Length: 173
Image (cartoon, rainbow, N blue to C red; front, side, top):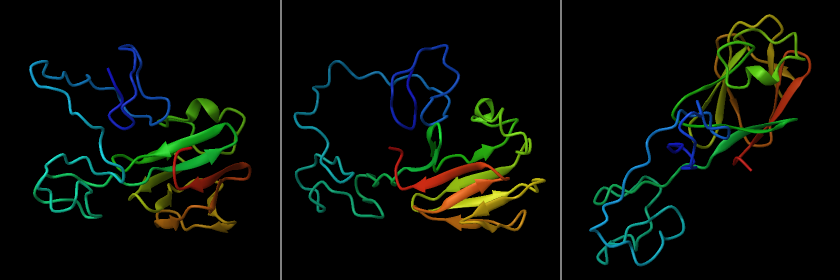
């Protein structure tokens, strides 16, 4: 089994990746008859080994229409006191005491709502939506309107209720 986001190996009984919070999928089997690529993927997100690649093996920002290679978006994360929590582009991160991959870390934060906020990522910025929480969600100490998406960029501080804070980072390190 493997994480579809970070490609980390995972035990079959693991319910989700501890870094990406994605459900594991079976690792694709490699065709043993096919020879392995002689060189590793090229830096910059491209891995096209076609000698006639018109992009020199490096995918342009919007991807290559011929080979289908896309540049992987930079990972975005929220850095909490306990460490970073990645926010993938494939599904939102719900912050709250229920139905949240970080719910087990929120025991001491009694003023966090069951479904406090939702965080989405487009690859370059995060969008924060307060889910009509009782005690509010803040970006750089400005309360955001419940139900209205608000942008958070790397370096911004997101606060949930009075004490739970996270720093928006441009990657998950």
